[in-house]
Image (cartoon, rainbow, N blue to C red; front, side, top):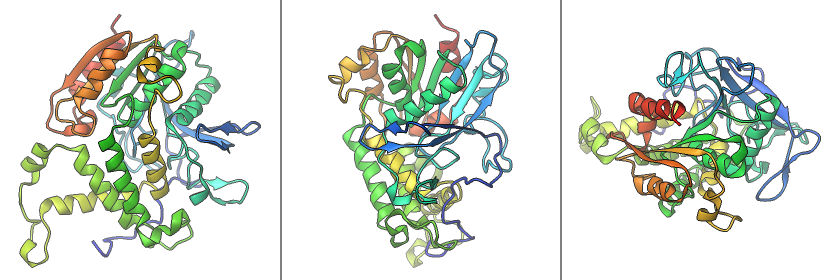
Length: 383
């Protein structure tokens, strides 16, 4: 994959002037910047978000949906100008679906540190009038929840009907429930845990190193490079490492086995089909994501620990007053079921672990819409 098949932008970040699609924008922390958990401040902060359905007269039907690492605010809806892909939970969020937009007012924000409209490394630093790049500060899951809480305040939502997320989104759901228990009477956490494990940290750190080792990364200050000259190769490798961990060995065996890519002979320098698959998805990501955001968000996931500064995980989870529905995937090797079972042992009010049966691994939360939808629907309508 030494030469790209097409022109690859230096960053796939959304930027002012691009088609907004369904995004709305709100600005916070202009007068008083956000004090960050790791030190330093950040402000002003723009949050891009999308809404679906209508807020009722009492403001009691609002549901917060939180996306995973490379997701964005486009949880539902068609691909269109401003949105390169259809909604990532298209089979879960919508009229008559598990998160029924005829009944609920759904809010999905782009994450702080991301690259699809919310302030992140590709955003312009008002102090320099240039992208933050290497100067973007360390952010944590708690900082991201602080930005989301500011959005809730601006929307007039004092309490969510439910906060829902999977993977990195699930990490933020847990932080919401610990940090703002009075605002989260009900939560749904799928394929996530209370703190990052050693293996999760290891895999994320390898992805970060792959990007940083790309000479076109230029220490994070690459935004003035020409097309095809950004750090897309490093991010492609990072994505490949992640993609293998997101799927199960059985699924990869059934889909690809040892099949060569059509027209190629691995004994003569050609690729196996699985290699072509990983390269394709790595290059595809470069059209809609940013290398610096990949690094900042990966490190935020590595630093995830609801017990930090709170007396440990058990003490932190004991603060949660809302009912938590837990879901896990039987083939998830990145966030195995034992992690959700730990949550079930420590959360005061929870459903036990609902198991999603799938060979799709961690990514089952994105593809098993029927099973995921049943877990969500039963929670939203439950006691």
